Amino acid sequence: MAAATVARVIENRYWSSPRDRTVSGSLGLCHMSVFEPPFNVDARNYPPQDPVRSRAFAESLDTVEQVLDELGPRCVLTPLPSAVRADLDVVHVAAWGSMVGIADPVFAAASGGPLKAVAAQLRERYPAARIVGRVTYYSPAEDTEDTEDLVWLPDGAMFHAAGRSGVEPFAVIGDPDAVIASLGLAGWMLDNAGVDLAEKASEVEWARLAGLALGHSDPWGWEQMETTALRVRHSEAAVRSMEHRYFG
Image 1 (cartoon, rainbow, N blue to C red):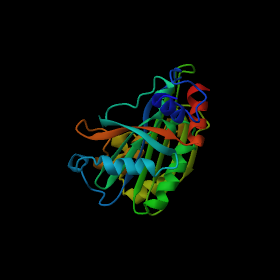
Image 2 (image 1 turned 45 degrees about the horizontal axis):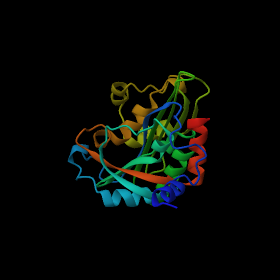
Image 3 (image 1 turned 60 degrees about the vertical axis):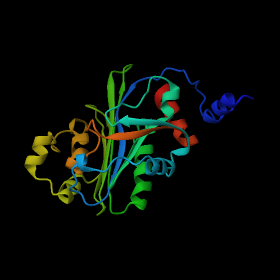
Image 4 (image 1 turned 90 degrees about the vertical axis):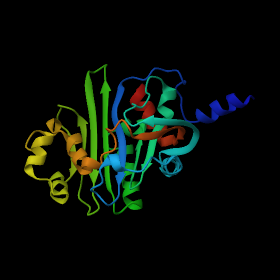
């Protein structure tokens, strides 16, 4: 068997969908950030991203079984590819000093699934960190947007909000008020961000509240910041979740 064929078989170990099958829906936000002290670093002052630490971080996650190929640097503003099934094996990962992060299509696979499970894994490994996850996924067939946002702080304060934007019921666990208090967020900060917890849960701008947990240290909006793109073999459980989400 030719080497290219062997590689393709290995890559496709858990997938039942062919590489060129069209993905249903489109990804928006789909990343997890692990932010260690100090918490007042301007993202533009981070050191250059470290590809070696980035790869090691990706390989340490339960959702990634093996890195198959390094695809080179990407601007953090570059969206994850998600046109066909083969795109779903690509992740963007980075290590900028005290911040590590990963954008991975598996996070959009199931509300309360991979994102929350990976956050719990990271909570044990990085007890002093702020862990922030943000996901949006648009389904054109239903003209709906699913969102999932998570903040988990070193003192244990956390919230996890997941559901269909504008549609009740919308699941919220943890204590968003405790997160706000722990972060020391004043009312005007919430107002400026457009966050109002008095609204229905499905109407709250949870992603903006998650963004406040990173503040000026949020790395995902700066053109000059880079990630490393990797082609990976996801775990069997991760692939099953993605099959259900992206091909239904």
